[in-house]
Length: 466
Ligand SMILES: *Cc1c(COP(=O)(O)O)cnc(C)c1O
Image 1 (cartoon, rainbow, N blue to C red):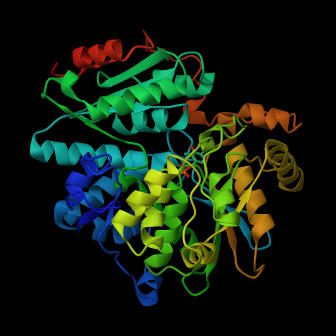
Image 2: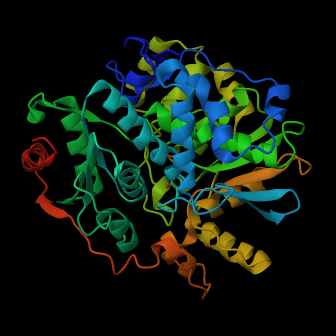
């Protein structure tokens, strides 16, 4: 399998190189040159498979001969064995033909574990083979950092440095990062805000000379193709559990950077009958505004009760734009260069095509809280604020009540107790058993000034073979 850039100018790469690369050299994102397609008969034959075996069927064509099949199977068995539910991604029924797929049974209680638990293992496998080392550098305002740290804690060939804004992440989120013990794990609290952290990461990728040529940076944000790939699997899993592929399904997906929902779009293109995909956003609704009015325009960042969806632009949306433009990389490049300067639109027929592929909705904080309360009162089931947005959008956008509607449950409610409290409920979502002692565990992190030279010096000094 070969991978090409959405901006058409960077060289095509194989799976291993795509895994180790962040952005393409032309600023684009990598996508597969062509998608595998599965017949209904083949998909039907996967009914009843354990999650890890289904993951092998869906992902193997993307990995191809980069990893021998037996090694890849073993890696997937290990990856999905760490989830705290035998079904890995269990379905919970809310109403007639309405479901939540719980994607928060992994080590950090959010869906990002599905991809990052695998990504850590993939990286270590490939680096072992190549006798190479990488430094992962990332900025986080919460979820991605902890999932990446958990994913890489056992990697021998990876050091991970995660920057978070000092005293500006929640205590649960900070502790999920800083209590993970490992010589290769480095938490840096920057005396600044999230944008400062992100800027330092971006600049460091642009000029890696501070590492002295002895190692290289790798990215774990959702521009990394392997993350999207791992997220395709659970669409097949849900469908097969509810009578697919012999009936089609609808999915509602709480969306920030468009990674998770893009995986659903790919599942459909790979042959899974999906009749509706709902983009569910919070007040940071650039995608909903584009879908409703063909205008792609950055607004100011709003802080909401669903912080993991607080974004100004949606990086993976570029991958969809590439398809909408007939995979013309130069058209995408021009469009996104213009989008950085002001609002842009696409040709009407392309936009109409996008509207056929997706429905969308934006949900504010009050409606999020109302939904948490409503579902709890109906079912004694607690939603986290991100999932609540998905459920609300699913109900608002639903086209056919005969089609099962599945909302992706992206986080455990215990990660976001504030939203639950604000909804007026007096229940307190307990942390699951494997995390119950989070507040007693020892923390390890270094506070540094908001100064890139100091941060780079720290990294250069502290990675394994420095
Ligand atoms: C990351 C995240 C999202 C958004 O996912 P994208 O792939 O960026 O669209 C939604 N909910 C939670 C809880 C998350 O951590």
